[in-house]
Image (cartoon, rainbow over all chains, first blue to last red; front, side, top):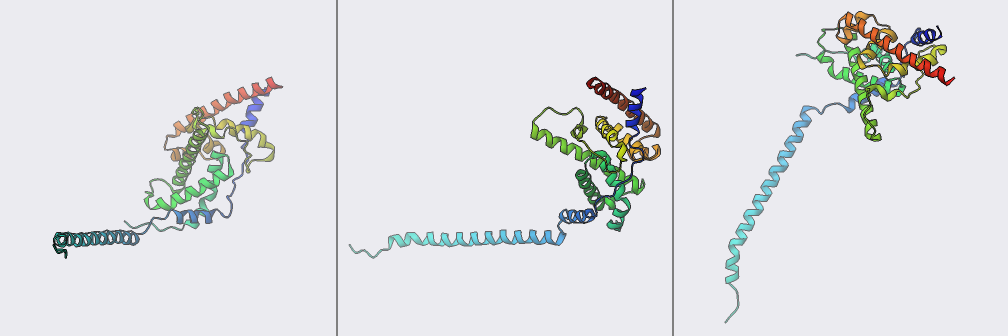
Length: 88
Length: 182
């Protein structure tokens, strides 16, 4: 009998439970969480992609320009070595 | 497809108590319940346009809240395992077994008994725990619980019956232990 009472009292302990409201600041926290999780908009994505492409093409351009310049210099260099001002 | 327009603030005002109390009954910790409530509303905000209206909005929100609670428990358990390097718990819900949670909505004279009840509820298998909390703590009808859990009414009746049977067995053990100590 004692055991049954113990069990019944525990099982019925949630009778008359009242619903609780969350704190008032919770909605603001939700808004800031939504802001944090906001996906980047499409125009920004395209702007970043375009900037990367421009940077890469600029790099390639500079590299090819400097390569042709060094090639021209190396073509001249044998001439430079043979033509000296030494008199024998 | 046109996105459904909705006012998050209004939705929050209507359903905040529902979500918060489900989380509180499930997690038995005020900070955790607030965190899960935030996550539930962020999820609602992100996926309301995908809501197919096959069930009521309330049922859909209940499902999100329960799933979020289960995910939270799993995450917390895995973190705990990572830090402790202990053996894997037999029950995913074991993490809050040690807690001495005092539910703020429970009558003062029932607080001690409710503490024992919540401890024992946490040892139940996931489905039995959900059915018992929704039916017996949250006070929903079996039809509503069946809709939320996407099961038949008879399956819910059986889950609640088994949950009660398990609880009685565990409480019997607790009673015997308590009297041995005395």
